[in-house]
Length: 542
Ligand SMILES: Cc1cc2nc3c(=O)[nH]c(=O)nc-3n(C[C@H](O)[C@H](O)[C@H](O)COP(=O)(O)OP(=O)(O)OC[C@H]3O[C@@H](n4cnc5c(N)ncnc54)[C@H](O)[C@@H]3O)c2cc1C
Image (cartoon, rainbow, N blue to C red):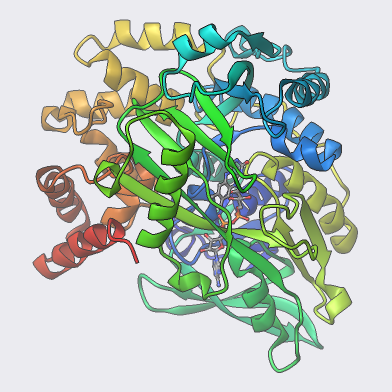
């Protein structure tokens, strides 16, 4: 993957995409694979914002059935199956236990009805390319079985539970990057640290953008037939930029959602309970730890200033302590916290939790901004479908024929693995020098590119060094810089690898990674210190 500025002389594209979250990269993939020339600009690192703040689920969203959002749930369930197919090393089945109690809110009958419809709407869940990815239908469990499976479930008033299946996206940051890499295989150009600072207009229509290369400090102009605003929580700010002196009343709501990571509290099942305020709280297994979330609170500040606050963590801890039977958790038990802002369509509902997770595609011509489209809302799970729907409007506006999408029928780049278990066994046999943990982690995160990483480590044995409990190795740092456009220590620790995402990995580990990055990227001492400071800053709350 090469940065657009280093790789491309072209200044005109069919499509310019603003934003390198899952929405932007999915559109880049859909458009490039349909024959469009595409340039994507991301002002920070790819997938650093909302797309890195998810509950790590590829899911239908059982709870949306409560609002009768059958269309959204069916679309998500269909997309869940497609993700399992096209990214088999990154998307895994995950059982969910939903305890039932004597009270009305968590009543067995109501839950059973929801489960029935969820199964009905996921009628094609058995139709996956890898047999091991097929998800069973839900089951009802007795009180004693429930308690034997997950000890964190409260026993008082418990009548039993239902178990159903969704999928876990173990590393959304890398999945976003994988979709982008797939787009680039079809010729899409992309740059991180490339901020769209203003719009170029001809006869009142948007004809391109001015982009600041935040690494070189240079400004560049690019023109396009059409520009698509995929800036997530920044989408309305982009529209204000495009409108210039004209007023733009487009408004999106932003809602904060945070997660915490603690030592392992649940076994192999995700457990979901309803809080007193009617919100769902999830406790999930993740990388031998527990991932707990999420919250949903309207955020009224500047999205650039957003940071997880200590107050939000304390509120979440209180919810966990009230709703689970584990030993009470305190701030000291929180290994890491992350958060993000949901861009939600302003549908005038009172609280952000009730606001729909559906997406919308706006032709900004209606607001006097010709040749600009804005995409808002949505879920990570439905990003591919959203991109497909956006293509309908894009083709109509550009006069190009709408081609049949191929993104649901072929593996993402590096994910060409027919049978994951057999593939891992095979790699273990081929590379006996590496631990099973390292092999599993590399296959999950890099798919078929794991060969390249393992070969690097064999050629340069010091890069074999294991850095985390998951068995991540130093070769990944070299790979991130040389092949995945990683420009900073944070890019490496939090998005290209998971070295930093389970909590602070220790000064020694960070220093080892920083030394290698400094060596490859030629960082002077001052830059190393700045990078180290930014990493420490990431672990601080507001
Ligand atoms: C707490 C939480 C939990 C969630 N859990 C799930 C889940 O489990 N499953 C699921 O399916 N969905 C989930 N979602 C929803 C999902 O995360 C979002 O729908 C999705 O990530 C939105 O992606 P995006 O690309 O639209 O936005 P983003 O990922 O925010 O990307 C927008 C990008 O635009 C860039 N940008 C902004 N301004 C500019 C500019 N001027 N120039 C260049 N670039 C710019 C930003 O830097 C940013 O990277 C969750 C959301 C939250 C907040």
